[in-house]
Image 1: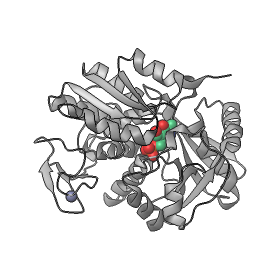
Image 2 (image 1 turned 135 degrees about the vertical axis):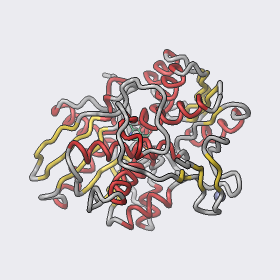
Image 3 (image 1 turned 30 degrees about the vertical axis):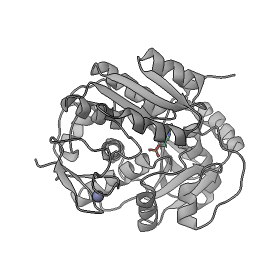
Amino acid sequence: MLVSWYCKECGFRVSLDKRYFWRCPRCGSPLDIEYRPVYEYGSRGLDRFRGLLPISPLKYIGEGETKIIIEKLDGVEVVFKLEYSNPSGSFKDRGTALAISYAYTMGYKEVVEDSSGNTGISVALYSRIYKLRSRIVIPKTTSREKKCLMRMLGAELVEVPTRGDAANYVLSLISDAFYVAHTWSPLYIYGASTISFEVYEDYGVPDVVMLPVGSGGLLLGVMKGFEILNSLGKVSKIPRPVAIEGYSVQPVFKVVKGYEEKGEDSSLAEGIMVPNPPRLNEVKNYIDKYGGDVILVGNSEIIKALEELLDLGFVVEPTSATAYAAFKKYRDRLKGLKVLIVLTGSGLKMCRE
Ligand SMILES: Cc1ncc(COP(=O)(O)O)c(C=O)c1O
Ligand SMILES: [Zn+2]
């Protein structure tokens, strides 16, 4: 199968096994990957969907194949996808499994990344199993527990003041290292698309998907997954995407609605504080194309949602609880519908009293 890095903006195209690019070397845009998906099974985890993905990972440590739990809540059928049960406690493992396997195949010995936490933990874990050195640039706001976990996994940490500083500083570390660049990488999008393949096989197609959005990789991946299934004639409908952001950082809301909405601080949702997502327009396009929406939430709503998720037995982190907080705000508009809520990250990483 011919698999290439491909830039939709300028037409740049190079075979994936020739060289790695974290963005288009010609025009600087985020890259896509060109390949021809076929419905063909491999073995376990992500490799199960081998034919639907541009590459499949060499090693398997239990990522993917997460459970769904279906609850009837206020007249809405809610499908919770337990992504927090991935090996490093978040959905990021799907993209990381592809990215680090690829880095290893391409002969890299060192990996660098900028992350607010979960991707850093995931990259540290997968780098360890492939015996690659990892260096993670994190903002000071990253929780103590997440820092501790990254160090335990063997990553070297570089602390800078903000998430934006991390994105800038990491560029000075690239030279011979593999820059994962999860906010840019199409491998994270294809990794997340396997969430949709699993939901399709275990449940079917929901009417609405409600997803926390930081860089947008999760939303783009889930939508891309349903589009791939649609292009292969497996499904006839594509769900409506509802993006969830916090009031404190709301680039998607602003670009979709054309204004900003004032509201409560939302700093508890540390995983979605991404002010300039490189693929912002792609997120907007999906929302426009499939009649989606954007909902903003604040800390008090997040805390309440987190408590209710714990009541249901879901031990998640505040960033994941934003999706449930938004569901509660929006539920009058969801009556009679089937709604997928992806529970993205584990609460076991951040136990605080
Ligand atoms: C727990 C959690 N949920 C959701 C997201 C948002 O994912 P994305 O950056 O792909 O939009 C993140 C990102 O770090 C996260 O850590
Ligand atoms: Zn280009």
